[in-house]
Image 1 (cartoon, rainbow, N blue to C red):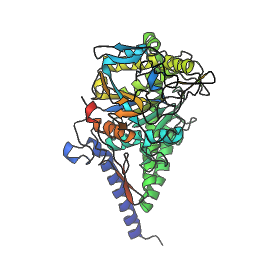
Image 2 (tube, rainbow, N blue to C red; image 1 turned 60 degrees about the vertical axis):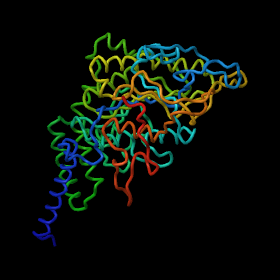
Image 3 (cartoon, one colour; image 1 turned 180 degrees about the vertical axis):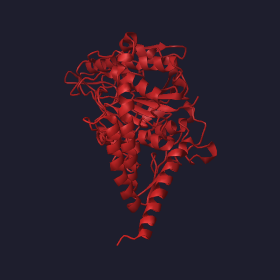
Length: 445
């Protein structure tokens, strides 16, 4: 029998859970003294745009200049380099538009990771762990800072096919990355699909969702299931996104000059097995999402896995990405956003010097030394940190591991990597793992 007393007890538990959830959501907006321990204050960045060059860019022909050596095995940079800006940063002639921003870039030439296996290093770059699914960097940022815009997700992932790299894993599912199609043409996240009823007007959709959510909350109050709480939040967010997202995805309001600057609609050359994407549109969407209050935006260009035809394919990749990235940096600076937007460029590893083999250009995977660059968000501008050996194969000075990069990104956002933790399966978990990561203070402005 279900007595009146049992009903009141169950209802009170449900109200308690709802109140607790509301308190958690409000934590990021609370006064400084009431913020979570991981919010250390002093943030110089409010958001991150991660330009992920999937496959491993060859550092010796982009940002890590090595003069020609005459050594057939390690000839050095095979494309010309020039010094740019007042800082005199060496940048490849393949990237003339990005080179205009030399005095805004902070180049890290001492990056290293644990493995040269694509899938594992790509996972480690995004989650800190190369073997198991863990929350993505973007999910940790969303969890740590909360939502700036209640109608949009905290984390958007453009042209990323592997769900493991935008998954919130054991974090509340509302912090899961929202994936957008190859060219940003659709939003296919479950948070939208779960509430999408194309045949119903918005008012009836709201009533339908209220009915489903009432049953969800009743079930949650009886079982105290955090996963269900996350689903409830995700479905509410998905409903709100149906009104906000289409406007952001519609770039027809942009001027012709802006679309041309980003090279929107320009056809890319086919590189390897990766289908060409409209990378300019992706970068433009990244700017629009950043303006709208999304905390973490990832843009992926996935064709840098070059084991042959190095000169041809690297040139094609640079042609596809150079102007859109420069346009993004231009826009952020002109709108006064670069100072509090951290832009990060890099891939899961790099590639050492060119080694001719049977008449083909061959470059291998190299996790021992490669390049990232950052811009804005409180990093030193026109600065180079770290160094690889003369062959470009190993980091020998200013070494920065993915864990250190993660800790530094969190620090710039006002988050302490050691304090930002989540209790799961009987222990605390952190983005930087049990090994921890150190903030690279040498690159902080």
